[in-house]
Length: 217
Image 1 (cartoon, rainbow, N blue to C red):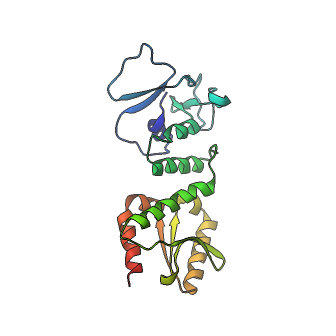
Image 2 (cartoon, one colour; image 1 turned 45 degrees about the horizontal axis):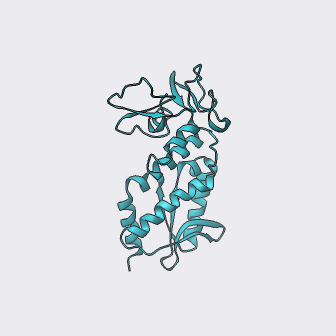
Image 3 (cartoon, rainbow, N blue to C red; image 1 turned 60 degrees about the horizontal axis):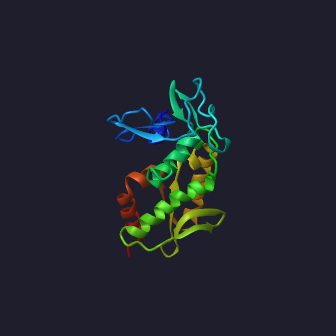
């Protein structure tokens, strides 16, 4: 069955990644290596018996009583939970976090995944960016200003940076809260910069330069 980042692409957790297609098999005896296919042997996996249209349908018993395989678009594939488990350590951490967030958006409850923990991953990425680019001074993190908690604060420059993820900022309530927060902070004399999760991944240098300009003497 399809597995690892190939399964993540099928589940629309990640964009397709160039390279071999990853396939997990119960055993490799009698199988020949094929160009473009990366085989993983996993004795706990067996092909699911019947296709299921539901991403949360768990069809085949696996390790520790979990079910590990199902079908999507009539293709045998590891379940979303198993796919996430397989991604851990085989893709960069930022892609693992993205896959987890996409799984949560699909309504899948992941074992050991806490919303705040996923959110903190974005904050860690930004903090690492600040620490490694442009010799920026380190900000305070998760600071209470008035009735709001902000992600990053440079107090002496009265600068606030917020990192927005779709998972935590979609919907009308979050939309209104973000605007109310920005207005309150501006009235308190703070400048507020907002960057999206996608910008943080795709344009880190531009973000660093933007913050550096705001912190310049």
